[in-house]
Structure formats: structure tokens, C-alpha cells
Amino acid sequence: MADLSANFIGIPSPNPFWLASAPPTDKEYNVRRAFDAGWGGVVWKTLGSEGPPIVNVSGPRYGAIWGADRRLLGLNNIELITDRPLQVNLDEIRRVKRDYPKHALVISLMVPCDEESWKDILHRIEDTGADGVELNFGCPHGMAERGMGSAVGQVPEYIEMVTAWVKHYSKMPCIVKLTPNVTSILPPAMAAKRGGADAVSLINTIKSVTNVDLDHFSPFPMIDGQGSHGGYCGPAVKPIALNMVGEIARHKDTRGLPISGIGGVTTWRDAAEFMAMGAGNVQVCTAAMTYGFKIVEEMISGLSQYLDEKAMTLDALVGRAVPNFVEWQDLNLNYVTKAKIDQDACISCGRCYAACEDTSHQAIAMSPERVFTVKDEECVACNLCVNVCPVENCITMVEMPKGALDPRTGRSVGDYANWTTHPNNPSAQAAE
Image (cartoon, rainbow, N blue to C red):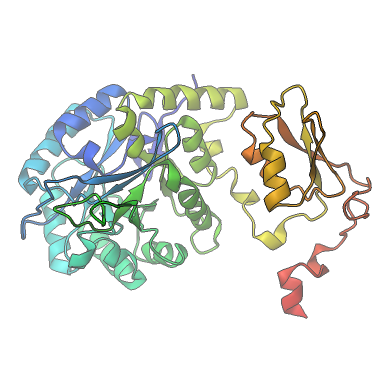
């Protein structure tokens, strides 16, 4: 088994799989069960100051999006930060860390955006034995309306200011949790770095309404006939999260800033993808809420086997894909592929033909016997057919050798000798 022990910004853990700050990490009972199940670390559900009490709704807190097989694709939640007394949480954190000294335990924090409030909460938590703090600048509902959460995370100046306060009043490693509810993730990440953050974590949930009740005409979850926007998470947000993680990992002003990847991690493969895109570890929530804590066993065994097969260490995996994450204009136009259909695997459903004929490039022919073949002279290699085919690996994209004649364009593959001056290159157009 590959060694999965991790050290994220000086915080050691048995493996890189942490539970994110959320209902699964709300109390001692849950966290003990999580550590016993094999999780390497947890971020304790967000603590607030001892101001006005936090009151959660007593009706439904979740909306959901399902696939055709009722597999959960996404959750929308309207739950607030912990509604349990601060001192109760602190006492529990102290006991858990005492009994699980080798596991990572980070405390998520959210208090009003003033220096005294942050100074006070940091003083309250400093003797718990926790390994670090995560600043919750991400929640898009409930707390944002009070000037916290994403209301702070959407203003880089506030991120930098609060992060600097935390680094001034605490020696604990500081992770800044970023909101995806911005036009670009880079300014908030840069602000966190300027403020002295040891790392960033992302993404927090996406502001959303998952569905509308068409009998009561209210967004769901519905509370006494009314609904509100919530935070969206789960497998459906993974593409958004991967892009934002990669943006931070590759940008010159944020390159080297440690990243804790969050957003739809359900399998070991999801985790490996986040790490390849620059994350030093991953945080999980929806998968644990869907399948229970034991899902981490598959993550551990799967990632270990993958690393063994690749003869790769965990550290070598982190950031491995970042150099290949480029802007569109840097892609190689000399690379040409064509779709190929495996007739032995084809079940003659016709889905590829319908999709290509109606919505794409009319590049698939259907014979009277319902045999489907690709017309190379029309195929632009969009791979829509691959994605709609219900049979895995029935349709594949095959690279044309350099020098071969592309039947669609009549050009020799490799004709675009100088992409920097090609008319399709936006940079070349701008230069003109």
C-alpha cells in the first residue's frame, strides 16, 4: 500500500482525506465516528461568537437534484453555522484532539467583520489543541445577510484585512475558505495570500435554488409556504471546483499557495484529480452525507492502488496536471482526431446518429440495417457521440498521424506550422 500520510501546511494526518466543515463535523460523536472510520482529518463545523443565538429552521433544510437512477447529484442546503453553544463545542474539540492526536482537527470560524470579534474568538480557541483554523468566507445564505460568510468572501479587501488580523492574533496555521460566488476566484485568492494565509480551501457552496414546488409555488426546501436560496454542493459542482483550484495553482501571483480542494469529491479518482490540479489534500461533505463515513475506506484503498500502479508518491501527484492546464489559444491545432465506432460493441441504439444529425455535424451515417459509421470528411472531432453513447468505449477518438490528409479540410495534418500567427488565434488577432 502506498504511503498516504500527509502534511498539509505543517498539519500531519494519516491520509489526505478530511471531512469539510458541515453537519458531519458538528459534534464530538460524529467526529469520533469519522476518525474511527478512517478519515485523516476534519474541519469542525463553523463556530461563531457568543452574540445573538443562531437559530436554524425546524423544517426541511435540503433541496436535491437526482440523476435518472435517483443517484444524488447535488444538495442545496439552508442550514446555518453551528447552533450549539460555543463552550460546548470547545470542550468537545479539546477532548477529541486529546484522544486522536495523530488526526488533523481544524476549527472553522465565522464572526462579525471587526477586529475585536476575531481577536476574542481566537483567544477562546487557542488552548483546545486544534491544529489550525479555517476562515469561513464562503456561506452564501443566512450568515451573508448578516455581513459574514460570502459577504466577506466577495470583497478581496475584507479577506486580506481579516486574514491579517487572524495571523496577528494567532500562531495557528490559517486556511482561508473561498466562495465560488464571484466572477473570478483569483482576486480573493490573491487577497488571502497578501493577508498572510497559509493556505486556501475551495470551493464553498454555490448560491442556488434547486427546484420549485409547482403546487405551492415556492422554492424548495419550503418552510411554511416559502423558500430561500441556499448553498449547492455535491458531484454536480466538481467541474466548477476543479477549474477554480487549477486557476489558483497555475497563476503567477498565487502559484505555490497551498490548496485544500473541496467540491463534489465522491471517489478516490475525484480526489486524485483535485490533487493533480494542485490541491494538497481534499475535503469531503456530500459523499459522507450520502453514503456514510465508511466511504473513506474506498478512497484510501483506491488512491493507494493508483499510486502503486503509477509508482508515484502522494507529493508527486500534487500539481502534476497544472502545466497542462493552459489557455485555449495555447492548444495545439495540429492535433487531429476522428471518431471511430466499434461495431462489435455497438448496440444499434442510434443515439450517436440522432445527436450528430440533429445537433452537430451530420458526420454519422446509418445504413438500412442500422449499422452506424463515421463520415471522416464531416467529423470535426467534437466527441459529442462519445458522450451520448450508452456503451463505454464503443466510440473512441483516434488520432490521425502527422502528415496524413484530413478528409474534412483537405489539409495535411500538421499544416498549422505557426499557431502564434494563425488567424484563429485571439492573441494574433489582437496583435493585428
